[in-house]
Image (cartoon, rainbow, N blue to C red; front, top):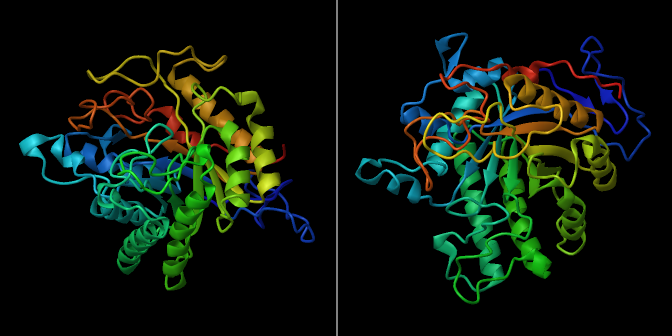
Length: 399
């Protein structure tokens, strides 16, 4: 996948033969944000577990390596979540459980396979033993007894440093690191003992939150010094309506300024505060205001309301967006529309969440199989569907 380089006004490249590329920006414009690469990303965090439990992926009718499938269809970035000590991922299998998933060693395997296909990697630190999202930001069990913010900040620093040092020594340093996942009201908000440092920014605890975020960022920078890969840092909130407030407060009240990327989740069925029609102008506003690269870190849309197992699906009960039916064509059209709006806004990429979460015998806390197979880029027989090629579409850079 060829890189795409953006300024506020134009996409930048010396190669004008690629219709996704534009003209050089004004070199005197000190406020421009230059994007060295537009990321067509896929969160493939479940792939190893699916393969271990009977899932198969097909392309052109043949069973193939899913990492290669995504690379062949235009993905240039793979995103992987990292949990601190996810013992539950083994325990859900009972006596049949043999390993952890989404821990460091599973992530090591994923990164190795993604890099073998030539993809860059985004490592998503959840700083939790389980899912971190706006509704759940649980303290890792190992840190529950902490009562001093300096000790918590040191723990975040040491853990982040140790993780990245390990990967760097293996030649697997990620190109991008995400400090926290959908941290709308903060990080590590529940599950600690009384006296655990308050990091709830919805209650105004920006000083503590800033200390935690800056510790993670410092660890990234410390490892990058001795790495051939100079890793960039992302911060992440859910829903674009939260971006202005959160990043204003993070930079001013939290003192968090050493990061390159603003990331947000945008599931247009759920996140209705910014309509698809307003997405381009909204994202362009983020780029202009914060002088950072901007990416959609998570998005998805159903291609059917049907399921392929007994695990209830998360999407499909809501009315479809006007003009985008729950069909393969509708899903493809929406992904092309979202991506075009990001390209036109001067943003840096779109990452689809779990497009390979097909049905299999894998388990999580809530079911066996997948609650997402109707959003995947594979049909119920494991064959790729047309949406996967939205990453190879030639987008208009002249808007």
